[in-house]
Amino acid sequence: MEMERDTTDLIERARAGDHNAFRELVQGHSHELQVHCYRILGSLQDAEDALQETLVSAWRNLGEFGERSSLRTWLYKIATNRCLSMLRADSRRPRIVPPLPEATLPDPSGAGDAPPWLEPYPDVLLDHLVDQRPGPEARYETTEAISLAFITALQLLPPRQRAALVLRDVLGYRAAEAAQMLDTTQESISSALKRARATVDHHLADSHSTVTTNSTAEHRIVARFTDALERADLDALVALLVTDVRLSMPPAMLEYRGIESAQRLFAAVTFRPGHTYRVVPTRANGQPAFGLYLADAHASVHRAYCLLVVTTAGDRITAITSFNTDVMTRFGLPRTLPETD
Image 1 (cartoon, rainbow, N blue to C red):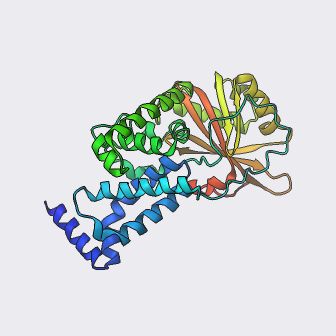
Image 2: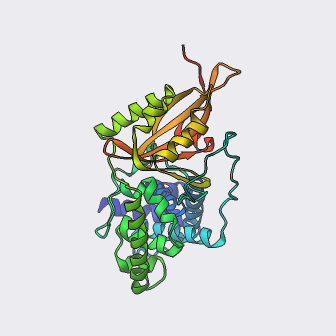
């Protein structure tokens, strides 16, 4: 009851133009709204833009909040529709595919599912979500619903199917609530959800995606993967992979599938003569990730080379997604590492 009075007081003060009251009102929701936007948009940079636009809209329209729903639900409605507007307007930043590695790439297995705009999400930003519980209708655990495979699967859906699945199966809103948030009917929500579930479930099954956060097996994989990269031991790295492992490298929409393809790719690009690396383990999307640094032949430093995010099942790696160096600063990873003795 005391919390409700405090919230009501903050709302009234914010409506009267008190910016500090508004910041206090929304600060407890801002981070989960950013994650929500990330799920729909697949890009942390785009999610940050959507969050800022959501808060600006909420500030301007706070007088319209009639408290028929909770403040949290009202903010989620604004954020969801802001994301859908961004998708409809194709207003996200231009996607420029960077040059591929100077080495000649082996022929890919085919086009990958990961879209050009896909970005990893630092686990350190997920710490604020510990106390957020999904609603009664949720179908996916919070950890699964942030995995790279899940985020990739969402990007395969049309925008409204994407929004319906996140609202219903991730956040746990009831059909009537989701319909109100998307200004549509419950029948439309149910139809969109049925199609969305079929696509997402098929993708997750095909990707062998599992959630084994910080398990003992995962710790062993991190140690062995780091050691194999730093010793440039291709055989040791390949021994960690499942037979039908998948390798992708957004924004290039290429996929390498199977151990033989993976071996050829690593030999051509990563384990080239004269290349030596240092590895900094981190975490992204609830999964092991690695900042990879290549030794500079002309200076006593290792320079940022890429960020690798791996998907595991038991004691094996089922997928590796490589991101360019642009994302590394979001993980607190430096551009260079000093040479060690």
